[in-house]
Length: 390
Image (tube, rainbow, N blue to C red; front, side, top):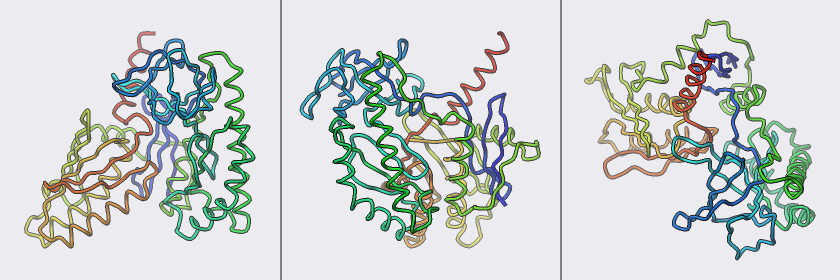
C-alpha cells in the first residue's frame, strides 16, 4: 500500500508520496507566483533577444517573449497578428516560471487555466490529450471533442475578443464513466473558457499591476491532489493520506538529495552535477561485481530507475545529459533507450528523450515547471536563518 505523507522540513510543509517504503514524490508547500495572472505594463523592448521587459507589480519585472503574443491580452489598443508590442502597452500576462538567480520571471500571454479533466490555453488552437491516457481513451475523447470544437470556439469568439483556445484532456479524464465522459469533458472545457473570458474582462477593468487570477498551487490540498495523480499514473490506486509520525525519516531523505553521489543496491553509483546550463549524470559500476555477466547492462537498467527518481525529486529541468556505462551490444543499448523513453512517458513534468551523442551521452530535456529542489532548499534555509534574528 502506498502513502501520501504530510510533513515539515525546517518549518516548511512538504507533501511526499511513498511507494514500497521509498519516497518517490516530493513537493514543498510554499507561496509562489506560478500561474498568477496580472495586468502589466511594457517597460521596454529588447530587440536583440526578441523580448519585452514587463512590469507586472510595482517592484517586479519579468521578460515576455515577443513571439506569439495573444492579441486579446493587449488591452490598451487593438492588436492584430501583424502588430508588435510597444513601450507603455498594457498587457495581461501569466507567470510561466519564477525568477532564479539572475534570470527574471518568465511571462506569457498564452493564459492557461485548468480543472481536474482539462487544461485550456488562450492563443493556442486544437484538441490534444495527455500521453499518459491509453490510446483507446485518448482517441475516443479527442475525436468526440473535435466534433464540437469549432462550434464551441465560434460561440466564445466574442467573449475571448477573437482569440482561439486550445484544450488538453488530462490524465484524470480516464476516471470518468465512458457514457458520461464526453459531457463532462465538454462542460469542463466551457467552464475553463468562461474563466478565461472573465479574466480578460476583469483585466480591462482593473488597474495596472493588479493580480486578477491567483493560482491555488500553493495550497496543501493542491499538493496532495498532485501526489494522488502521481500515484494513479503509476497504477497505485490503494493509498492513504497521513500526517508524518517520524518513522519514515523524511527529513533525512530530503537531506540525502543534497548529495552528489547516490548508491544503487548493486553497489554501483551515480553522480549528479547541477550546472548553470545543463545537468550531468554519470553512471559508475563502483562496487558492483565487474566479472559478473552483462554487468554494464544490468547496472545501466538499474540506474534508469534511480536516475528518474532523482530527476523527479530534485526537479532537474532543462538539458539532462546521462553518461551510462559503455556497452558493445547495440541490441542491449536499444533496450536501454526503450526503457528511458518509457520512463519519460510517465513523468508528470514533460520529459523528452532527444538523442544519443557521438560520444555515447544520452540527452533528455525536461520542462521547467518550478524551481529545482536545490533552489527551494536555499530559500527555505534562508527563511529559517532570517527568522532567527527577527
